[in-house]
Image 1 (spheres, rainbow, N blue to C red):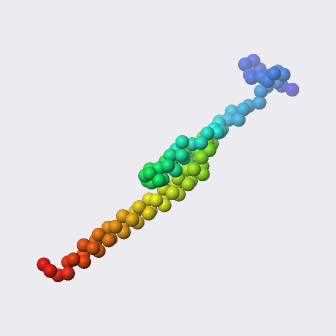
Image 2: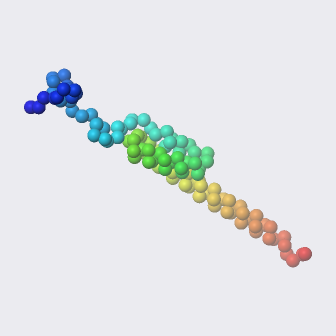
Image 3: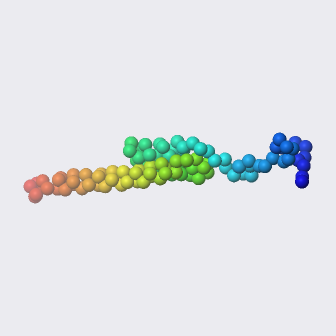
Length: 110
């Protein structure tokens, strides 16, 4: 049996205290939901490119801190990418439609 030295933490029986989780450099696990993950999901519907950025930042923070919200960040990323792709396709389709409509009236009458 080893006895604690002066200044070492002790339990009530006088034995050396066991280190708590996170004592040796492991990040302490938080129980809250990551705010950036929530914002990523919200911005997926409001302004999808911001949702993409926030989703990637949230996933990095969740890996480092152990917070909850990994699925929120993932769904925020998925929806943000889908809405951004739909927006880009819609813009390309609109430009093609405008170009096609503008070329119909140029039948050779100069």
